[in-house]
Image 1 (tube, rainbow, N blue to C red):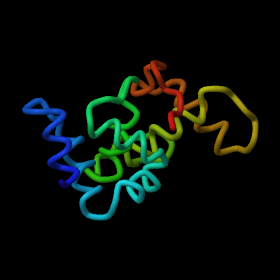
Image 2 (image 1 turned 90 degrees about the horizontal axis):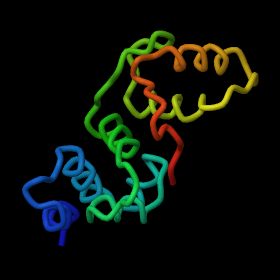
Image 3 (image 1 turned 180 degrees about the horizontal axis):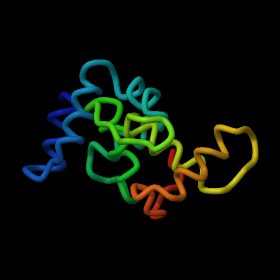
Image 4 (image 1 turned 90 degrees about the vertical axis):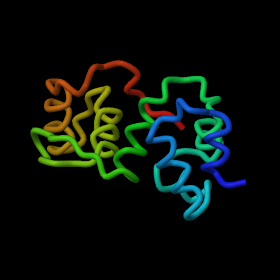
Length: 125
């Protein structure tokens, strides 16, 4: 059974477009390779495809939309960036750390950005 078939079985007619994109990526390579590409675990990918992921899937959605659907956002510092890059910076800048100039600049920009709602911005595995 393909990943797309699995996703359709568990999501039914309500399957979002990003779930289909995730499943298609898994079918092109493998679930493990997709997990590595998006920086998450294979079990998380499996749970998302099977509509069993207990947390808010917004982080995973942004990663999939950025990596596989080429969706972008306008960052006031970096210009046009993938949604996955934006999500990564929002996760990194949850707590201020004076590690380098880029981090400080991104921290300030992320704190003022309307995309950053502050909700569930933590990194997941």
